[in-house]
Image 1: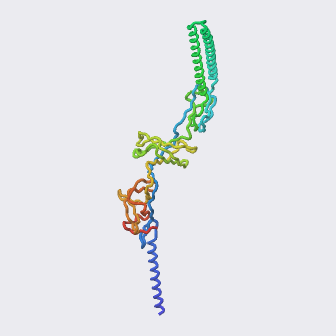
Image 2 (image 1 turned 120 degrees about the horizontal axis):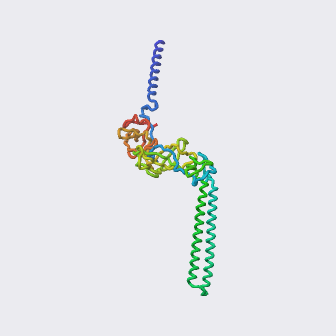
Length: 370
C-alpha cells in the first residue's frame, strides 16, 4: 500500500512539473522581443502618438565655399623708391593704417617751388587789382569835377575790371594747384581703405615702386558663400530666401540670405551666392553645409515620418480607433523636415497614430498601446 501511494505521488509531481513547463513556455512566447510581433490575449502591443501642429520647412541641401565679398588692391600711385613698408602677408590691419611710404624728397622740392610761384603770381595780381581800384577812384573824382572825359573814366573802369579778372584767375589757379599737390602728397603715403587681412604683398623696402606694386587686403567682416543648385530645383530658389549655414571646420552655425542667382548653368547646376556676416573665426576657403528654405508652412499638421507606410503611390498610417482596433487611413503628405512629415489630409489632430508595431497590423487588428 505504501508503495502504491508513493507511485501515485510520483505521477502527480511529474504532471505538475510538466504543467509548469508548458505555462512558462507560453509566457515566454508572449513576451516583447525587441521589434518582434507581441501578441497576448488582449491584442498587438504598439506605441502611438497624436499629430502635432507646428511650423515645418522645405529645405534644399547643398555645399558651398566661404569667400570674401571683394578684395582691395592698394598700389603705389607714384614712381619712387620705397622708404618703408609696415605689414606682411597674414597681418591684420585696421582702416586707415599706413601700409607703406615712398620717398618724396624730389616731389617736395617741386611742390614747394610750384606753390611759391603760384603765391607770387597771386600776390602780383592782388597788387595790380588794388592799384587799378585806387586809379578808378581817383578818375571818378576827376570826372565828377569835370576834369576828365567819360572816355577816360571808362578806360579806368576797364583797367580795373581786367585787374579783378586777373586776380580771380590767379586765386583759382593757386587753390586748384594747391589741392592737386596736396592730393599728390598722399600718393607717397598709402593707407588701408578697410579693416582686413593682408593676403598678398608685392612691395618691399628700398625698391623702385610703380603702380604695379602694393598690397592686397581681404575684409574680415564681409563674406559670401558660393554654391550651386541643380536645374531641378533652381526655380524654387529666389533672392532673399533664408539660408542656414554650418561650417564644420569650426563647428559653427550662421544665418544668411540668397544674394544672387546666375542665369547660366555650369555643368547642369546654377551658381548661387549667399550673403553671410563673418566673424574672427570664419576664414576664406572654409566649406559650409547649405540649407536653403524654399518653403515654410506654419501651423502644419505633422507626424513622425516612421509612422508612414506606403503601397505603390499610396501613403497610409494605422490609427487606433475608439474600440482599440487598427484602422488604416490613406493620407496625403506635404513637406518633410528631419524626422517629421506634414500631413495635408487623411487624419486629424484627434487621431492616435500608431508607430511601433504597425508592420504587424491588419485592418481591424486589436491593439494595446504601451
